[in-house]
Image 1: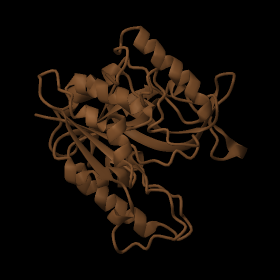
Image 2 (image 1 turned 135 degrees about the horizontal axis):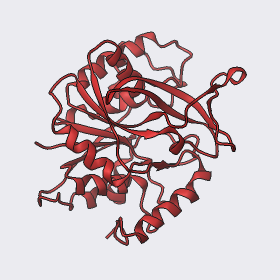
Image 3 (image 1 turned 90 degrees about the horizontal axis):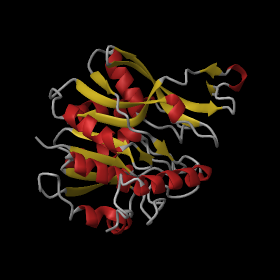
Length: 308
């Protein structure tokens, strides 16, 4: 059985102030997603799907897409590459897009845009997060054992290891029971204080303390193609419920997953690895990530350059 890695690279990067999906942060200009691709292919993923903005394909091809097509799995099989564009043409006709709307409709919409090119179990990730070598082997092993319907997987990370010193972040804070995801709450304004405290600051007048050891989702999910039907139903309902002035609202994977778990329609295995996550939310995060990537090359985790 084969498996696909879907990379969500169509975000706006508004807090970063630029195209963080393609920013060459590695020592030889590697973007973060190039490390995910390298790790996924050596773990045994056979196909890479890029979800991109309109007009972005030439950039992704030049950055890494054409090179990925020359890669092979450990079994010597060629790696397939496909592109899916996240734009407003895939929004159902019953919804009138406000003229002021510029943002994409979030991660559920992004995933749906890849529906036509994903026919096998798949993992889906953010382009701008580094997930760690072992995470890809761990989720691939699970993907190949999922039932055709009603099962999924998630790689979990500790909250304390995923916050930024430079501003608030959004995370799916999870409740885990007997190895399965019991609940995931998309928490949009998580702040870390110098003394190590971490709080939900959505309501500044009543900040909610968060356990630094909490498991969080970093949008590293594993599904079978069955999920696309659920995504479509959820996205359509999201649009029907959307007020005209909600021009920045997003339809998010953790919220969908939580709803399906609550309804008893999805069982998500929470996978733990020794992998270390890091990513860039703000420009101020960039030097820390660049140094971490340099260290991984020097330690031999990666070859001197991923561009070779």
